[in-house]
Length: 383
Picture: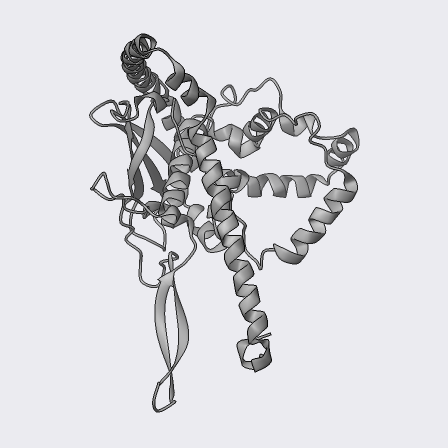
């Protein structure tokens, strides 16, 4: 019932409802206060407060020792990062050869293509093998001739992006024709001062932008926070920087044009205005939110969530996709990741409850269209 349809006689009812709301608010506030006080009175704090003064003094000495241990741990992670840089350089020639095969610049020899288990052969049933052997010779030759024209491994990185859930959520339909031109992703490490890495996305000449390389830079820190040293868990991404994309005219997929009708306040006339707004696109990855220079400046929740998701994606590309690209292309790496998760005992839902949950979701939370993305990205720690 709207306020326009309420009767004057309902005012007393409204006042009683408001009183009930006030009482409820008071009760909630009291509950929150009790919960807060309970948190302060946590067992650990109570235990510390009840300790004799000499013991409290010695606890402080242990904490100072713990800070020294944490700084040694930070040094360990710095050396691990340096070692990772050394071995990355050893892998670099292999990644270069991979790029040449993907792009079609190099054709591997028969010896280089030998592999103990050929998934294509293993995946064929006897009936399919028989059918394949019975194909008309002319059609088979025509097929072989057409396959000779295939250069490298088409859509290699686009296929990987579509296979990996978090990246698939980022890739829109209008991004796919552009990502077909992506033929290599490289990682360039900063060994120290600052610690970090650059992701380089190499593109063939295309009709969308003039850049041949798009970059994303991530800066990491490996120093315990002076004010909170005990939360240190290793190198952590804390800042990133994208690059400018030189879009060709009319090809920028990160923006879209919309038309809106505006009504004049006094005359009542209507005019149509055109506005340019941001469009969902994978290429927004190269325009991350700007982190304030002021260390004390607080970011809003939305910006923090965007940065956390961005850091997670950057770390995932560096840590997993680039070193094991072919296995993400075939899907084998995804199977390995699925095996890392186990269902806990007692987690099986009752079928009736599951149906009720599904019905409730379909009625209240069903997405209106497009791809659904997670709202709680994990914080990215690199170790």
